[in-house]
Image (tube, rainbow, N blue to C red; front, side):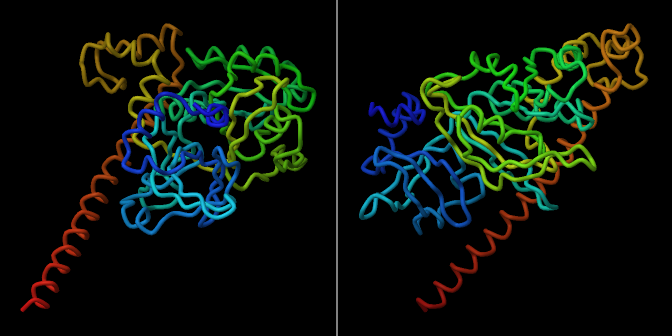
Length: 362
């Protein structure tokens, strides 16, 4: 394998699919930034500005068929290699997605082919465990491993105590307290950053994702903003998802990181498996309920309620789990209805085209 491709995260999984595709003549490249109408990709020829081919746009049935940051694509290099055309999208190993903002149920892919999800929250008055649980469910559902980063530990009175408190509320998830300003706690990131492996930083606006990425890169690659004194929130500065390779000699040298804009809302997309993993303690307790369809409300023999009464589970954790599960079920229903409507429109369009063809032949 070419060293430049290995540096970008290329491995046997992608190589196998690359050889099987009918577009094997094209150059494999990784999407490192998604722009409006264009992409930046990296390949053995360096970085290039790329656009989708007409055939690709025509064949893409939905948003998930379009490239996202972290994807591997087959490109045709243009003159000078500073321009490219994307002809194919290779299968994804993992896919981190949410429901796109708005009323219509659309899937939005946040990043692809990611092994670790760093969920960044700030140790200030904006700290919200319920929100972190939502991110953890999204990460587990993607097939990646979630790691919670409690940034701005330099602003907390007792960061260690808060770290232990959050850790107790997120069983099975590593929690790291650090400061992107003082670099305290950064050494704890090293075991989770491996050469050629990809991770992504997720979190709300202003929690310090880009500041952490800049610290790892050792340079000011991403714009950052100071915390607003009025509400203790950071300013939203990152506007696009971008992929970087950490420099040699730094913490996690050779690892691949994806920085993302802050998310003001996070609705899960088809996250039943992620919810089960994120709330594994509840799932395990529920197996001992008397009734298989127990709603953990007032049913007799509810093992979950018994665990809450005994202090082994927190009532607010059950409340958040039920809220997320209801949200997922509603979205599933909405998606099914929308899919049926879309299929009906496609069939109507197809039949209309056939009628016009027959009329023309007559």
